[in-house]
Each structure stands twice: as C-alpha cells, then as structure tokens.
Amino acid sequence: MKETILYLVLPCYNEEEVLYSTAEQLRKKYTELMDSGKISRDSKIMFVNDGSKDKTWSIITELFHQDSVFCGVSLSRNRGHQNAVLAGLMTAKEKADVVISIDADLQQDIDAIDLMLEKYENGCDVVYGVRNARNTDGLIKRTTALGFYKLMNLMGCEVLKNHADYRLMSKRVIESLAEYHEVNLFLRGLIPTIGYPSDIVYFDVRERQAGSSKYTMKKMLNFAVDGITSFSIKPIQLITLMGFVTMCISIVLIIQTIIEYYQGKTVPGWASSYISTWFIGSVQLISLGIVGEYIGKIYLEAKHRPRYHIESFLWKESRDEENKE
Ligand code: UDP
Ligand code: MG
Image 1 (spheres, protein in one colour):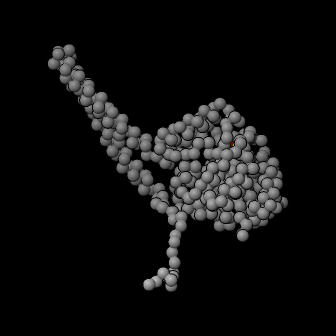
Image 2: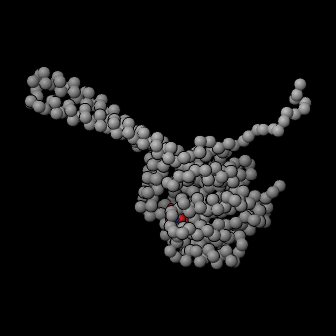
Image 3: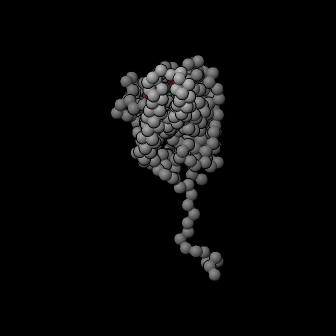
C-alpha cells in the first residue's frame, strides 16, 4: 500500500522565540512516524511566514537548508492567521495526501497527530482536534472564548466548541476548499459545511513555551465579528423581528391611547403624536429588515460558494454481459 504523504502546516507570525524548539519536536515526531511506516518519507513540515517582522523567515530558511523535511512559504505581508493557514493548505495541496494545520507555538499536543492519522486511515476526511480543558488560559481568554461559542451558535453558525485550527484534512477536502473564493475567511465555520466523513480527536493544551500570544484583543474581536458576519444573516433577520415586536407594542399602545382619549385623560395633541411615533418606528424597522433580507441574499450570492461536492460516483462504461437479457 502506498504510504501517506503528510504535510504539516504551521502559520508563523513573529515566532523567532519558538521556532527552533518547534522544529526539533516536530523533526523527532516525523522521524518516529516515518520509521514506523505511518507516513511516507516525502512528508514535509511546512512553515508559513505571515509577514513576520523578526527573524522568523531567516530561521525557516536555515531549517530548510539543514533538513529537507522542512519547507517554507513566505507571504508578502501580514495577512492574518486564517489566510496564512489557507496559503499553506493551497501550497501543500498538490503534493500531500493529507494535511494537518497546527499553531507554530505547539500549544496543541502533537501526539494527537498519531490518532488523527489513524482516523484518516479508517476513512475520515476531516479530523477535528478538540481541546480537553481551558486550564492554561487566563480568565479573560476563557470567558471571551466561551462567550464567542455561545454567540456563534445563537447566530446560527455551527462551530465545534473548543476546536481551533488544529485539524486534519484529506486532499479531496482541500480541493473542495479551493472552490470557496470568499475573502472573509473563517475556516472553522467553513470546513464543516464542506461535508465528507469526519471525526474528533481530543488533546491537551499546554502553556506557550516562549514568546507571547499573537492574537491581540483587537484581532480576536475582528475574528469573532468575521465569524458571525461570514456565516449568518441572522443579525439582519433580528431587525425584522424587532420591527414586528415594536409593531405589536404600538398596536397595544394605540388601543390604550384611544381608550384614554375617550375617557378624557389625554391632553390635546398627545395621543396622535404618541401613536405615530411608535407606529412609524415599527414601520421603519420592518422596512429596514425587508431591505436587509435582500442585502443578505446578495451577500450570499456574492460569495459564490459551491453548491455541492460529489463524494462518490458509481459509473460503468457498458453493461455487464451477465446482466443483459
Ligand atoms: N499567527 C499568524 N498571523 C497572525 C497572528 C497569528 O500566522 O497575524 C499565527 C501564530 O504565529 C501562531 C498561530 O497563528 O502560530 C496562533 O497564534 P497564537 O499562538 O499567538 O494565538 P493563541 O494561541 O494565543 O490564541
Ligand atoms: Mg498559541
């Protein structure tokens, strides 16, 4: 049987402090996997330099000259984690049978790679790495992460809880991914929509070995907004809902005001201005919602997402002799 060619894709942004140690741990892991015949000797460890301002790229170049198991891609400038992962996946697509993306700081346990490969051999096209606990995160990161998953699900975007971008993808999944041309990339929401058999592997997260988190609060917030707005038109639909709620309230108020008017409890001019404020407000909200629905449709059309992916196709050139009458 042909051995699996595994490419590991690691996005790197200003990671000079961790790169040597990462490379050493991965070299060891690859040697084990190659010696036990689990992966082909053509497998590679691919570093993607996401426009780093430190020595990241020169370290990658040095590693590449040291050992041919390492290879590197450098982006023209900082494009963000998701784009760096995508660049790695698309570059690896031609040569690899299977790709695993993982962070360059190796906070995610690399021993899960064995399990992921096992699941792949058993027929899975996507294997999601899901972290066991959040003990290593600070209070702020833990709370914001939890809020993020809650909000995402509320907005109708199905993301796997505690799954970041540590995942295995087969060649055909990456080829399918290549058919998505959207610029606002949110891989962890996108991959599940592609389909194919998938499974989960649990792993432990450890503290960052060196350097600091490259995900600033601003980047994290942008990421969350990107996630919601790339997948859901629910916020627009909420406007319509709000319009209808306001309309109901205004009808109740109209009835109440009319009663009070006939009871003589109102001052001249109050009833008409009070009613019209509520009524016009609700009409405006509903109109905004209707316009929004169309914008939502345009937005979904503009993404040009593929409408299907064929998983299997049964077809034969001509009928078998024995089946013919
Ligand atoms: N990263 C990147 N571009 C960026 C920000 C981050 O390629 O603009 C990479 C970074 O080098 C790391 C991964 O994304 O390999 C995750 O970042 P980090 O470990 O800093 O995030 P955290 O683990 O703190 O969420
Ligand atoms: Mg990290």
